[in-house]
Image (cartoon, rainbow, N blue to C red):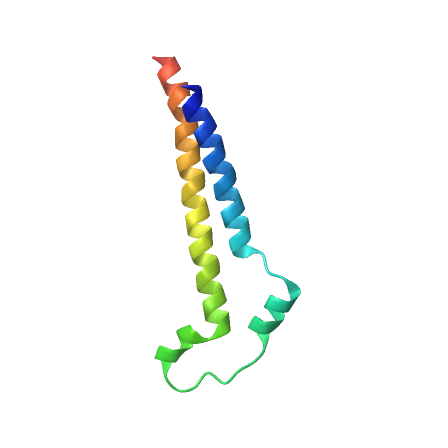
Length: 85
């Protein structure tokens, strides 16, 4: 049962790292994203803009990180639940 706790803790730590990585920016990257650009008339091209790409990347990383935290927490609960019964 200790194996599940160890793997759960590892996944929780990994999930926290991935989530943090998804929302942290350097000064240079923030400047690149914030520079004004003319988007154009077609909404289909908006997703290609740097700000949209940065937001989508942060969203993907945060989602992955939070799923890892959920999985890690679940694995940590397994031995506790088993010991209760």
